[in-house]
Image (cartoon, rainbow, N blue to C red):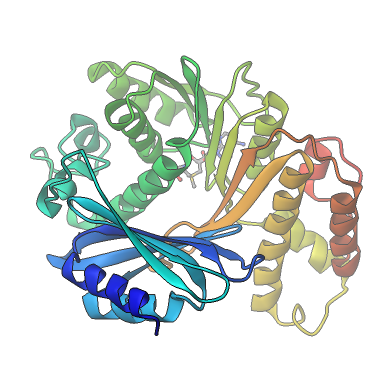
Length: 385
Ligand SMILES: C[S@@+](CC[C@H](N)C(=O)[O-])C[C@H]1O[C@@H](n2cnc3c(N)ncnc32)[C@H](O)[C@@H]1O
């Protein structure tokens, strides 16, 4: 191993509380674009969270200090040519040339970077269970302690808040941010969204929770009023009938079956910058596949038919988003132990108006292969694939 890489790794070992980036993949077209490393405290253990940024998804893995060094040895210089370590008082940059020559540069930093993980832990709290609405929504005791049977739900809410924060933070909004949470249900995630965006990201928001059940809408609006929450309101409506004039962010989490398609269609039509949905019960496509009687080696097994229907339903959704100029990612929402409905479709609007006929062709081929006549989202958007 070149001496400077060894020196760099020694610096990492000494300054183990710092963050780091690995970039410039050796293979130009490597799907893994870069890695961001930050120290975290998990169950009182100091670990390092590696966020692997792939072309279309992110993956996070936690390592202890020894494992971290092993991973770095694997990555440098075989996978990445650049690495920067951010220590308390300097940035240490490792640059490896294409011929394998490694150089090391250090730069003193001006700002104070004293780090305190406990402090970070406090700051990192995206959602505060002591806020009164969590008690009113039935997630906590009056004292703000999460109740035993709501622990899983709270983990899901927290994970959701983390993902939304990472998606929204880099976005630039002018003035009020218009958001619709379609199929908002009991409002857990809508309140989490409001708390995150107003209290942590200091955004001026207009969030509408769209829900078809009048009892829920009434109850939630009472809580909103009692807590005097600005920029949050529940609207009694079906997703199909709700047509927002202005929409920056569309959220639809576990809206049943084709309600997810109605939500996506509404987001696309309104030109939302960000579309985030976690699809639920994929009946429409499964029924079409069953009706066609065209089963292959996979789909002749009932459970696999069901899983394949889920994949096809969401793949076509992702392709349709791409067709309308959304860069689309499919990511895991939360571990399966907390909910089986764990896929998140994320579409970010790009400036290109794609409308690439090849995408429609891919959809047509999928439909043909599995005997599907229509995907509901095609109909909702007037497409004919
Ligand atoms: C499974 S819950 C999900 C609630 C919430 N988004 C979450 O993830 O915790 C789905 C909610 O969507 C509502 N819903 C289903 N179809 C709808 C439609 N077409 N229009 C409006 N709301 C709908 C249901 O009443 C239910 O409250």
